[in-house]
Structure formats: C-alpha cells, structure tokens
Length: 156
Image (tube, rainbow, N blue to C red; front, side):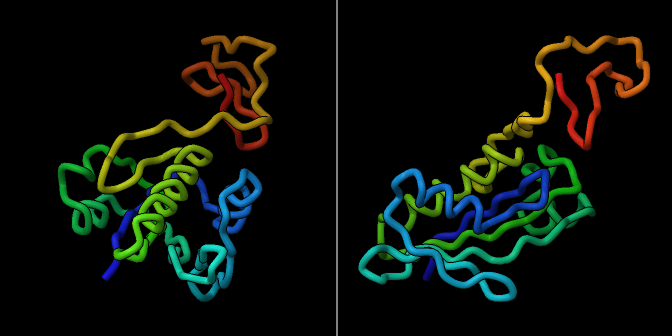
C-alpha cells in the first residue's frame, strides 16, 4: 500500500534535478532509476521511500476532472505535466519526503499538488528581467497584458 500525491506542473519536469537539489540541500537520500523506469528515492539504509513515475502531459481538461474530480479540475488549467509521487505507506519519513518532493516540483515549475489543491503560480525564471517595468503598450516583445516576453519566459 502507498500514499499517493499528484504534482500537476506547468512545465516539463526534470525529476532528477529536483531530487538532486533535495540531496544537495541536505536531504539524506539516494536516487536510483529513471526513464523509462520510475525514479526511486531511498534512505541511507537502503529502504525505498518514494517512487516517482515519468511525467505525462495532459492537454484535455476533462482528463483532470475524470481522474481527480470536477471541483479540483476547475482550478487547474491545461496543459499540465502529471507526475505521480508514491510514498511507502508504513514509513512516516516516506510521506514527508514525497510531500517535500511534490512541493519542490510545484515551487520551481508552478502548478499544484493533489490532494491539497493550493494553486501556485509558475516560478519566475532567472532569465526574467526585473530592471525594466513592463508597459501596457503591447509593443514588440510584450504580451497583450504588457509583460515582457523573452526566450520563452514572461517576466513582470
């Protein structure tokens, strides 16, 4: 039996990068596996804590509703990347690590975690410039809302 979370993120996730970041920040984990197999996080004693499935892009709003319920789906805009994060149920540490991993994905990529459903905006990229305030003029390099668009990043 497992404890499942679903991270619905705005950009294609790099699961290994987020897990490596957790390890670099002091989380005592060992990373194994990866595409095409699930990525697995183990504790330092070699016990499996978390299994992370490969991300799947969801482009149809009805699929989110069918799988997670219409009320939750109404708060999620597609397209999103769906990432199943499964914690081993009989280890409290596994649930904490799974939650931390899912929250880290959402922090860096924007989105939400099911079952909680608190929607987070996409993180600002380091490429976004904070030196110039965007204008509402809609000129070259600007969206209709006035936020600067450069190299695939909307800054503002």
